[in-house]
Each structure stands twice: as C-alpha cells, then as structure tokens.
Length: 187
Image 1 (cartoon, rainbow, N blue to C red):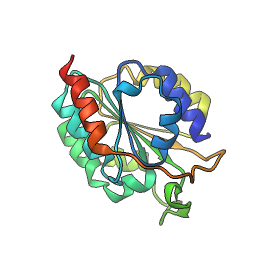
Image 2 (spheres, rainbow, N blue to C red):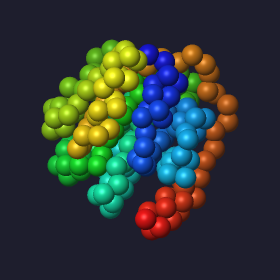
Image 3 (spheres, rainbow, N blue to C red):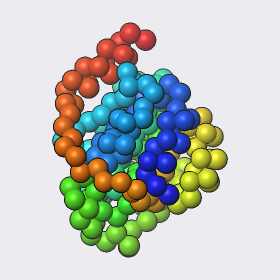
Image 4 (cartoon, rainbow, N blue to C red):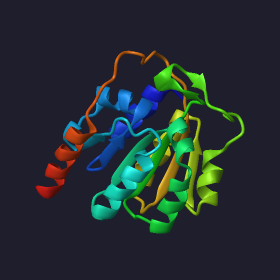
C-alpha cells in the first residue's frame, strides 16, 4: 500500500485522537490533517516517538493517543515495546510505517529489512493486540474498529511511496509541546 493512501485512511477515521508524528509519517500527515490543533509532530527524536506517545498516554489516560512512527525509528528503540506492554495503556495505538528504508534521509536500506517482523516483535514484547497490514482495503476495514478498542494496540503497515519527500523539513518540538499542553489544559 502507498504511504499517502494509508495516511488518508487514518485521517478519515480519526476523531478526537491526539496524533503524534515523527519522521516520514509526519511529512505525509501535515499535508492532510483536518485537526492540526490536536496534532503533535515531534522533531529530532528519531527512535523516541513511541516513548513520547507512551508518556502522553500515561499523563492523559482519558485521551486516546495515536503514534505514527517510522520503521527505522522503532528499530532504534525496540525496548519501548516492552515498556508499553508493561504500562498497558488503554488509550495507546502505535502505527509503524514499514518501508524498509530510512526514507527521510535519502532512502538508505534499513539493516535487516527483510529479516524482522514488527508484528511478531510486538507480540513477543507482550502487546497482544498486534496487527500487520499490506493491503489498503483490509487496513481501512479494520482501522475503524481498532480505533475504538482498548490498547495498547500495535499496527505495522507495509508501505511504499508514490512521491519524493526530500524537500526541507524543519519543525519545533518545544512549540508543539506547548500547543498540546494548552489543548489538554483547556479540556
């Protein structure tokens, strides 16, 4: 499935979830999000999106948190899956875009790209609700139900890209943290 199609499906079914993005999914998401006021793009934290999302989900247990992560980033912090499983946040959904390359930095192949299976790694880490999708129709049919379930939920998406995203991409995590804090305080 194409990454931008998957992003559009997520945006279609998103309701009140805070969407935390990083790396490649963040580039796609900022182009189409219908609720930027509750988006939380984080920059300069490759490998830490799942940890930041977990912290947010524990701080706000009544707010659903949706993390859109990259495969290279997750591989840098696989231990976060065990931590997520142990914390058992009911409001946490982690979606990993698995394209087998470090797309944001020039599409260098990820070591072991044909050897790992994120769904199996998540299950082995204790996240029972773990899924893998490589077909857009199936992902679309399942996502609307998964967003309503208690977490933690882990989803791996086998994706490819239609276009190049190599344009300059700069953001400010501190500014985005203030925006989300204000939104949560106003609730």
